[in-house]
Amino acid sequence: MKVLSVVGTRPNFMKLAPVARALDRRADVQHIIVHTGQHYDAVMSDEFFDDLDIPTPNYALGVGSGTHTETTTAVMSRLEPVLAYEQPDLVLVYGDVNSTVAAALAAAQRGIRVAHVEAGLRSRDRTMPEELNRLVTDHVATLLLAPSADAVENLHAEGIDPQSVHFVGNVMIDSLMRVLPRARAEQRERHTGVEGPYVVVTLHRPSNVDDPDHLRELVGALEDISQDTTVLFSVHPRTRRRMDEMQLKPNGGGALRVLEPQGYVDMIGLVSRANLVITDSGGLQEETSFLGVPCLTVRPNTERPITCSLGTNALVPPQRSALVERARGVLKRTGARARPVIERWDGHAGERIADVVCDGARY
Image 1 (cartoon, rainbow, N blue to C red):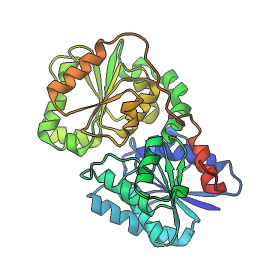
Image 2 (image 1 turned 135 degrees about the vertical axis):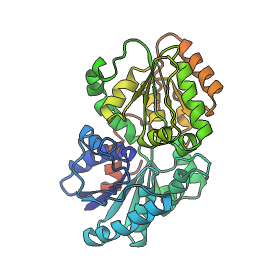
Image 3 (image 1 turned 135 degrees about the horizontal axis):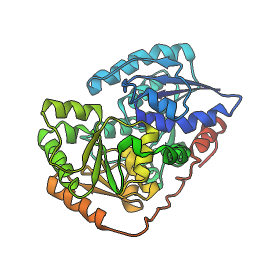
């Protein structure tokens, strides 16, 4: 059996890694990896492949950045000859980025079966490009590999054949559990110079960083929070560009430290010992919930509501006063962290996916 995986951004890489390991253990499977290059920065891409022990991709499409339409069409046009040459039995797509929907469409149009890892997540907000990508991908896929029970319910509610839906669990947690011991061991003071409590921050969504008013509010909030505790702001390249354009330089005399983008192992090490995470990332909502670390997500909605209902996540608007108030409330709490238990977030999702893809197993 020939399986072709298509990835393009670092959240994809974290989902690919457990699946690649599980497929590699099967002698009757040839696994081809295609990297679209949607994330082309070495720190954002190559380092993640090293951290996660992912094999070197068989194909690199070199798509790079662009508008959503430009990226999607470029992936489709560059992937098509690969599909024609390799003729895979199945194409695996991951998450909800432009590379995901582009690969799903390109494969489906050639009559190739598509399996979607992380199927069924819904924010109910169609102004988000990711929501449109999720919807389209799920409705052209033949195998829908859901990470949580609510995702399964979403797919059933949309009329998708229940026989196509499999509750395999969360592959992000597979990757987290694999690197966590190493991440904690390597998380030394030389990375951050931090002693004592700290907050980890990542912000990259256009709704937060492309809106000058929102970005000013958020940076101001981080400056306020840094009066109380150390704030480690890992700045995404997109956010860095916007801050430079606005000549926005965090200051204020507090302990706000601006970091370069962190590799996966380094970021997990920081997050695992943080007192609070502030983010707009989908993956960090899940990782903090698994680790029992409080998380404030700067978004009006989330496609991962289970992180709010069962995990440690809460939504907060991009307003300085609201974010500061919620953060200070979290930081005042003392006592042992509760580590939630969420069904099938157990480190074995990659194996279940391989069972479904290769053996037709039911989950």
